[in-house]
Amino acid sequence: VSRGIAAGIRHYCKNTPTKLRVSQALSGAELGSNIKVQGWVRSVRAQKANVFLHVNDGSSLQSLQVIASSELNDPLLTFGSAVEVTGILKKSPHQKQPVELDAKQINVVGECNPVDFPFKIKERHGLEYIRQFPHLRCRTNAFSSLLRIRSEATAAIHSYFKDNGFVEINTPIITSNDCEGAGELFQVEPSGPDHADGENFFSVPAYLTVSGQLHLEVVSGAFSKAYTFGPTFRAENSQSRRHLAEFYMVEAEISFTQSLEDLTKDTVDAMLKNSFPVITYREAIDILRRSSERFAFPTDWGCDLKTEHEKYLVKHCGNIPVFVTDYPYDLKPFYARDNQDHPERTAAAVDLLVPGVGELCGGSLREERLNLLSARLEEAGLEDVYSWYLDLRRFGSVPHGGFGLGFERYLQCILGVDNIKDVIPFPRFSHSCLL
Ligand code: 4AD
Image (cartoon, rainbow, N blue to C red; front, side, top):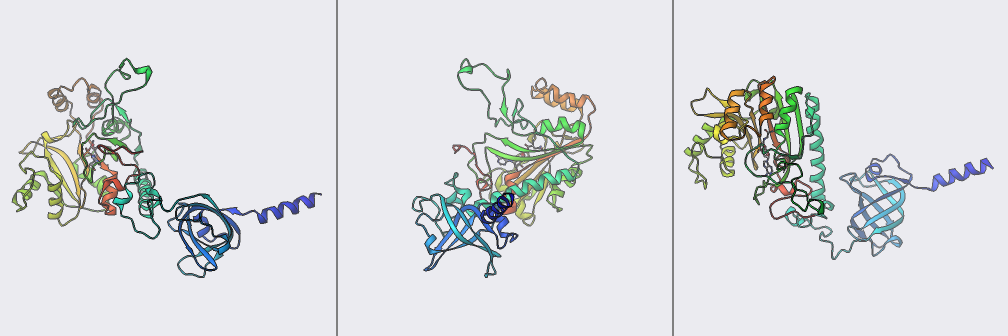
């Protein structure tokens, strides 16, 4: 009896297909086996005797070629439909693909009406067109490739910081501070019947964070090197191709820094694996004023550098990334360190400008001297709100600094993508919060 059961099990196993992901099938490890793959049809071509499909399940950039006799063809087997294919995995006679699946059975699991589906087989759709379908665009090769690279870049950033001795800190999404002081805050309030009386849930106004910097400063006071990589929010009423209301920021904070140069060399420079020109804000202003370009915005000392200025400076430096340092003191938030030895009042702040995008990264040395920081906060009427921040200077204050790099702008820059909305899965910007 037991021999009979064993034989039965062996027979069952031999005839039960092994379920593989497309990437596993493409690796060729199961050549000659009876396998099953599940995925979406990326192309379908019927000939007299055979039907050829490409099936992809997102596990690989490449699709698996499927060949079936025309009896298995089905009108529901259309571009975009979800299928389950069972057959024998064989070595392919074609050079372009290592293997092909000789199908014995094809089940259409989910139909896809080709007339209504916004993407058409064999058509090249531009990023702008596919952006109109935020719920479907990850089905396209172009957008799915961008998301795949985004995921790889995320992993690379984490490993860079891990390899360089940084501790990852999850800074809060909800906070009571406006780190940048620019007033571009989304306020957080509860809703629903329990809160109908307008009760203030946190007892203080609370907002979605614009930056994790101040919390990182708290932590760098114990760990020396800390970083965070998470979503940040800005109520900027901008429809530009480089602004989002919700974007991801890589922020790092380092204690015991000596100079701005140290800071940038240690981190941003190393991350981008290069050395770039460094000019001061004063030099930048002089370059802009000497140019024959007609700018829409003023180029006087003390003016913010606008996109048009940033673009010009990058071009002027040879279309490579450029650091601009030592901004006017009043242009920078309260935390920036006063460069007291400069003839013009400047702060030890730095922006990294890159081709095609403009400002990619902003950083500064932080004001670590209690008397200077408390005077500045007092001037702004913020000394009570930031009494905890002053405590960081009372108890073991050290020279320190940090920076924030806009992750979507980084992707835009390295991939040459024109619009920031195409490097984030679900973009949020003014007048748009789809899905
Ligand atoms: O220059 P920002 O405002 O710097 C800070 O928030 C600092 N507290 C960071 C720090 O030192 N820890 O923003 C940093 C970067 C910008 O250089 C830009 O790349 C990106 O964040 N950024 C945006 N990206 C997309 N959409 C927006 N609305 C952005 N605003 C800033």
